[in-house]
Image (cartoon, one colour):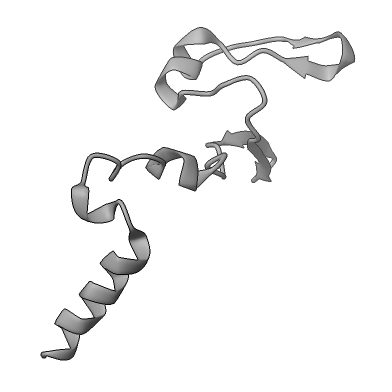
Length: 81
């Protein structure tokens, strides 16, 4: 268990050891819940932008240069089955 202090303006600093484990970043949203009279901080509920993690992941694939052709070809191949 890690101890911290509520500062002026009701700011709570999350200790470095916790930030590293959970990979909190400035601006992240968190969930705070009360359970059996205890207040607990839950992990980050959202990924900021799930599509940004995928951006460019197929950029080196030649067949993806023209996405319309790629999808058309895939559909034709799937019709065989």
